[in-house]
Length: 243
Image 1 (cartoon, rainbow, N blue to C red):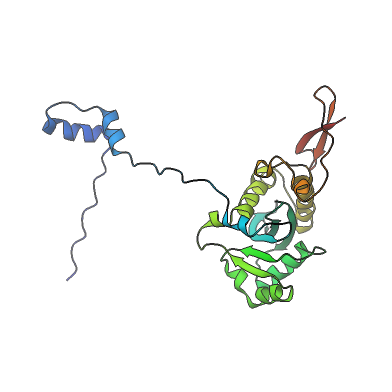
Image 2: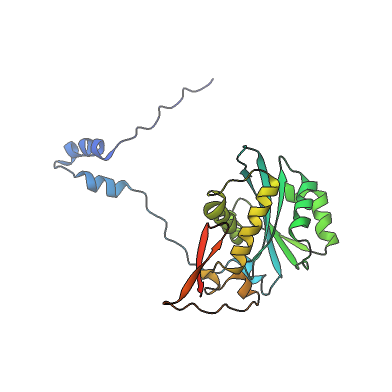
């Protein structure tokens, strides 16, 4: 015999709680007191420290992180982008782009295009996306003699560097520009890669650019009374340079 459903729990505001509690308590209770006592305690932030990936990435090209994201063109066509980042230097290795739906073969093609002409790393970190479990993907890594490292399931914070990069690409670039097709998207992402690697400084690596972290020389400092402006990504970003 099925039991009758239980009535929903009442939801009281601070005003209604005050009116209910005050008669039985013998004296009025202020609304701020009710609100402060019923508020859920906030979780204290835990200690901030290096990600577990930094213990693997002890040198340039020792660990790359790989992930996928999707964006839409001005014609509302979906495009998948595979991004590869070197964890130690924070530089973008490359992008792979496919229009429409993708599968394991597409992911391998995108990865090979993104890393073409570069020496392979020792490790590659990926999340638990089913696309990274295809036999073709695993065989591609085995042929390249790359060991795969998996992030913690359902925890994007365990894959922080590439997730942060994807957010930066969306927030600072793709949310502000349009693209027509895969060719146009590839051209614009290449321009952002040059800006990100060679000119955009990062607080996490002591104010250096990824290229400088990888061994490139620092540019000449600009004097405050004599400098110019260098434009990047068709004028979307401007940075001061020595004149």
